[in-house]
Image (tube, rainbow, N blue to C red):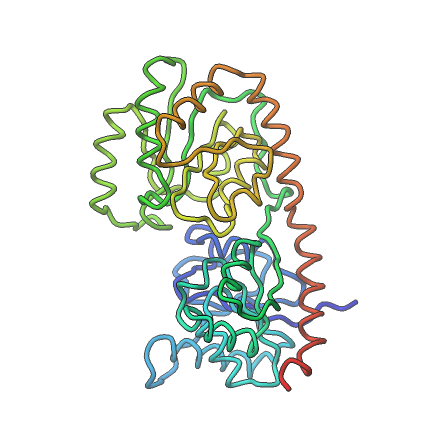
Length: 364
């Protein structure tokens, strides 16, 4: 069966380039299909190889930045004539394009809690949204949040994925390294990671701890008050802070680390860091919140990010038990293989075909 001509629309702040990509752009690159074109904000560096990319042109339009973005995407749609438009994480953009092109199937992929998004905050808005566009969630947790106020349940789930063919090779032996990777903000629980390391490292001199990340994605991330305070705490705890690193460097660090900790306070809509850590063979300690349990399953250990003594006990037990870490490494890798990009790409293509086939009835 021939692949559909798909136009994938990134959120305006996402950058479709290896050195600048956030989580959504990375996923779009992993799941790209034959005949697909990705559109997004203009780049100052080359875009990802192997996937067609077009910058959204600047269009004179009276209705603000997002109105101009929608108008720019609409210009590309008229040029390329896609069979399906897939919008990521922006209900307002999906609705805007659906209004301009009522006969063109438009899907909306939700990567975050829709209850905090413009045009999706209320049950009435979500009911309107699911009537106007095809809604897809990256986890059952996101799906449940969409349906939390008895809104329509016609929401498909297509999980995020990991491209195992593109992963760096992990070294044969792992370092005694505790690793946190992700945005360095309070919601991610990185301060709990530092507090736990302050307790366990003095009694484990052969181990070290490291934080990779910054306030946001990209090398120009600002130095926030939270970051400045955390640096002081990390230095006192002998936790290294590597700052923002390109994605391949993060994966390499995960391949070296014995334990990767994901202590998110914020309910993770999916939990990509956990999937990547398991795919690279690390033992994973994760928060039980949001979509993380869907990703980690029974392969990891769970810790409440605000219960530092409990996190300390879990880390100490794993640091003292190489056999358990080895078992968790094997189990985590097997769990991660369920989210292989090759599997998800096939599911995505079938979902696109389903959406296009059902569109005439949906728009009646």
